[in-house]
Length: 554
Image (cartoon, rainbow, N blue to C red; front, side):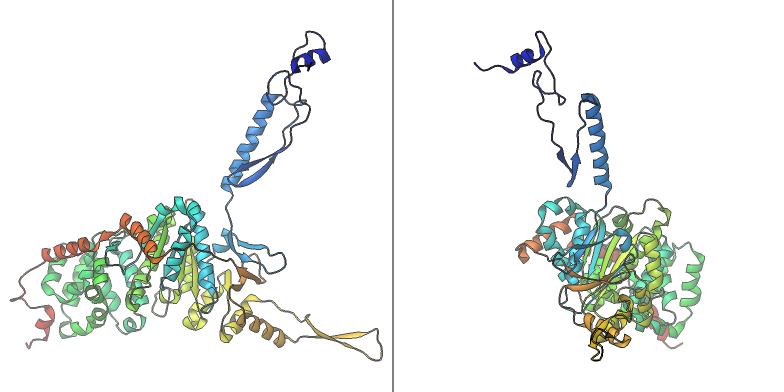
């Protein structure tokens, strides 16, 4: 007859002995024959090894308390540990992942490579990681491929991207159904700072034309300040400069005596020279009224792109300018970049709570500090870094930037160089590689004394030539990476990206869902503009515009 567990316990310990309790609070009477094995606990994807203390030294209550404190501490480190961005893998038999810290990205990132080398795919992978890790980020895409591929990448990984769709703001000024209102005069910043910011965007959009207009800055600044004081938009700027009655109507509520004096004592007394003074600016800003998309976008009463809020709340801004014409692309892109710069400078009051924001600008030379910009690129990069705006600047060749911008690009700590042209390789090799004269070319054996050999070394020009040819002949998806922590460049192979089969109709449907959350219908925007125009309507038959008066004989 089999002996029960309890009877076995009584027989081995004597009559009337109490049954044992094991250390893990199991049923009474069961002897712990084998010690507990160490277990593995998973917290937020991180695995920890737990070693329970023997009950000989600690009671069950003390052990539970120690184990709970250990798990709480492990969970704290798992939650506070910041993931590093994976760029690619080092080549070799056992390729190791190459990652970059946030500290390396804090001094901005520079990416260069000719078409077809994998530059856009690298940017796509970096943006995907920023989005899924919860970082505030954005991209300005002038070709539309990067923005579309990023959305496909996110749609292909629904589990990782599901909780981040609410943070994404998709901005496409070329759409004819829904547009996000972009009243740049309603930025929430002081009026003069807003005016200077818009004038800077004008300079970046039309650098050569506006350099030839000596009074452009004064006229544009005064006009923008007048429109802000009256709660209007950039669409009314051409009418302000050409219509005297309309201008007098807007001057009446002004409280700034200097602004009133500009219109009444300077602008009105230019006489016949007035058309010549404003013609250069009129040739450019009339695009606000002649281009129907720009008219609806910039003529809206509200501003759906609050850059300060986007940065502080860690949103994701995707700007797709690929379907716009060249002038619209440069203007909207410059307004967005200068708006982000202004929002970053406004964070000077948030010394301890500045949330990092990573913004990628493809073909950055069209939107950053070019020949017409008031600030140099070095100044812009320095200010952005101080206030938590970290840029990723990407383009194809160094010939697209001037000498002033090349000097600023050399100061960026994190550089990623794909295959480039011969001319660019000669310049970039000096920044990436550190050479010496110890590289052996071949060995020559002395015939007289067989035990002695004379190594022949590469000359320094030969070593530089090898570096240049290496950069020039890099295959696709291969790049050299140089960071502040590692001065010597490291060769990597970028990560392979695989998308699910998502057709254009499904992608457009998802874009529409993103737009409907923050955008307005284009017919509603058109009604806003027509209502505002009718408010300032008057009979122009007996009152000709200012220009016709000044050109009439005295």
